[in-house]
Amino acid sequence: MADLPIESGMLTDALDTAQKKVEAYFFDIRKQLWEYDQVLNTQRDRIYSERRKALVAPQLNGLLLEYSEQTMNDILAVRRSGERV
Image (tube, rainbow, N blue to C red; front, side, top):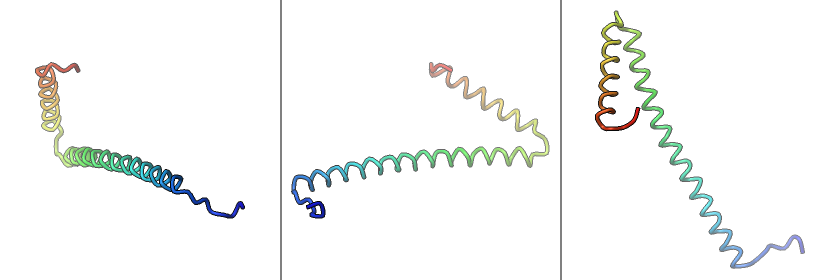
């Protein structure tokens, strides 16, 4: 009796439905993880690009001024928009 397969239409349908829900859930998780990874790759590329600029720059004064100005512009833009810093 233990070796006989369980044959029930309701049970089969319930298992199929549960399997589809689990697969959809994990597909969504993988999709979100992939999108998050794309954002990280973009940020990593930008950081490495700025790092390369700093490493090959004959003097860092101009680059530091550029970073300072951009930071101040970002802070002022946030202040103007009413967001809290």
